Image (cartoon, rainbow over all chains, first blue to last red; front, side):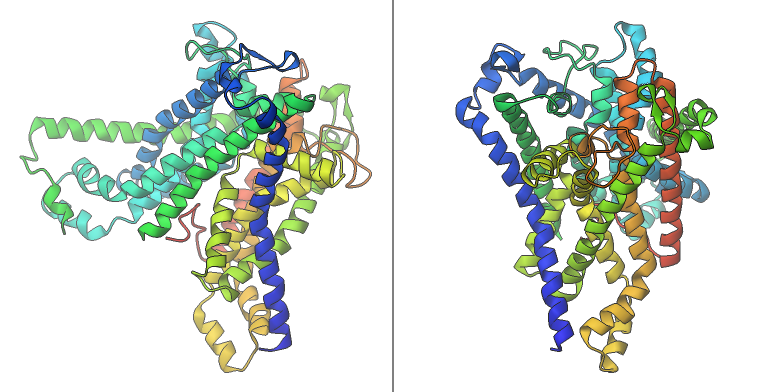
Length: 280
Length: 299
């Protein structure tokens, strides 16, 4: 091996190792700053404390956990069918020129920044939702906008999964006289299932990880939501709102909530990528 | 074909079938229209409310009255500086990592598997968590404070996975014959890489970089507690500076009456992203391939 090859090998391997270390660094630092709260307050008090009043030493995270799960699940329930339908659309319904446009539009939608979604939701959607009472800044508005934000993830995965279905089975069914929806429902969707599920699960992680749009739309009141029209604050929004002035154990609790988010999302992502790799 | 056996046979002309075909068609067209209509709605809304306020003086003047008047000159400068820091750190690191993954480390070696897994996890980390990490690591532990440098480095960590993945795909897309020909000429591996493989992959590499720029431009949550809020013109990368996205958030949420100006800034940001998107499409066309989505790359 020549000298330049050896140098290249050393430099690139070091970089690769460094890139892989970033995740460990993030976990390590989150854990370090979350440790005081975990030690002194303990996990159970995050569920049993009377309220979220960090200045008085009350650290109940339950309303925020509920709001986070409600908006994310709601967003995936809305975006799932629409995204899958959009993936099917480009293969079976759209004229080919429209299919190309549709793919570009999905791509553009994926690229819209979350603050822009937030701004649009705030000035356009919230006044419409306000017809049902309140300011329109509530969990429903946040959920709808969140759904629009994760829709491209489902759509792109569905598109690719449908594209990977062997055309022989589709042609075979068509030759038997099965109609379009019959083919999609009985042949395409079952075979594309793995890819579509991966897309939906990944959309869930995106929804769980979103901060800005939800922060701008959900109303940010810390109370147990009673309906979709109640305002709420998610864990992410809470970090964004309070990290600026939080100190000591309050700050540490914010790191605990960040650590929870990171662990949940990483577990899901690891599970998908592990399944994908072992499955093929 | 085992799959065909599961088709429920029945008279294709039964009315139930017909209704189902129609209903499904209507739903699918509806879903597709929703996607297209929403994008059109957002883009038109931003353009209509924002474009009329944009002028040359708006783009270069200083921020005045918390953003209600004046321009966004310093904000644009900060955004560009943050982007430069991000690219200056992330591009060399991801190039080298991608080279290691494609040319040096065996595809299924333990190291490669660990690196890929950690990059997958990194790509799923919520942006507010990057904000927490950047705040504790770059601003406090490394003592960089709220600065453009902290913000840019945080975003550098954030775009690593996408940048490495696109670079890997770009390198892998170079035909293996190129490498064989270079090997037959007796070129060393590094010469082959720098003289043959990377130049051939250049358009796709550029596309990956442009995609990452789009990601970095769109980011807000990771910047609030790293690059900070300061709207003055930064004197160096050690000063705090607010990005366009943070400016939009601040105007929309914290400045009463800031809505119209938030739209102006949003219009600038969306315009930039549309240009980036167009550039990506063009580069990928030149490169002749399509970047596979998350996890789609390696099946």
